[in-house]
Each structure stands twice: as structure tokens, then as C-alpha cells.
Amino acid sequence: MRTTEAFPKRMSDVLVNSASDLFSRTEIKGVSLPADLFCGDVFNAETYELFDQAVEGQPLICLVNVSAGDDKTIVVVDRLAYVNTFNLRAKDAASLKEAIKRLTADGSIRIGNNNKEV
Image 1 (tube, rainbow, N blue to C red):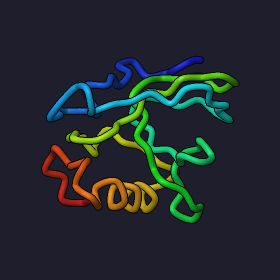
Image 2 (cartoon, one colour):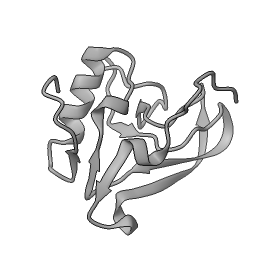
Image 3 (spheres, one colour):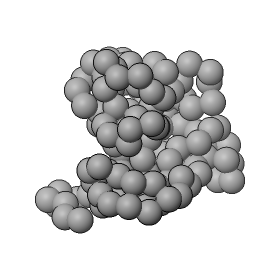
Image 4 (cartoon, rainbow, N blue to C red):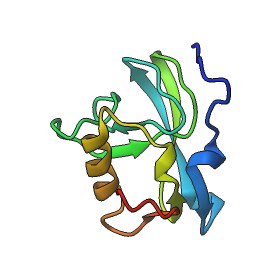
């Protein structure tokens, strides 16, 4: 997997605070990824592609860089966590806005920045 960023995002750039490290993140194992995922990518939990509001599925936030392929492990935001929306990426701006709305609906994931655009 290759990244072109001079300063790649890290987990601490996305996951800014949590009530407990035990619950703030979890792993999804044995996944077949159609494309590379990077820290901060919001992806569809069913298709493992960048979240698109036009496609059914629950959004998840990736916390590690993972190359495409079979039998991969992805670390994602779980619950009791604050995320920085500035460092998130979905298919487009509208999809990101919808993903954030869905992720924060039950209050287990909250926004940890003052981004009024969300």
C-alpha cells in the first residue's frame, strides 16, 4: 500500500478522546477489501467502500491504513468516543455529512471539535 501524504493521519488525529480505551475502538477481522482504506476514511460496513449516502449500509470510521485484499483486519471507532470530523473522508461532502449524522444519532460517538458545518 502506498500513501502520498507527507504527514499521514494517525489514530489520534481522528479519535480525539474517549471514555474508555477498551470501548472506543474494535477490530473487524477476515475482511476482503476492494480498495485501500486509510485512517479517517468513513466506509460502508457492508461493502467496505467509501461511504456513499446513496448506498444502503451503516458507516464506520477506519482508524488504520489497510491495503486492499483478502483476510484483512480493520480497526474502527466503536463507542464512547469523540472524533474530529475535520480528518474524516467519505465519497463526497454530502455523504460525509450523512455519515456523521448516522454515526452520532445514538450519542455513542460524538463530535469533538467545533465544526459548525456538520
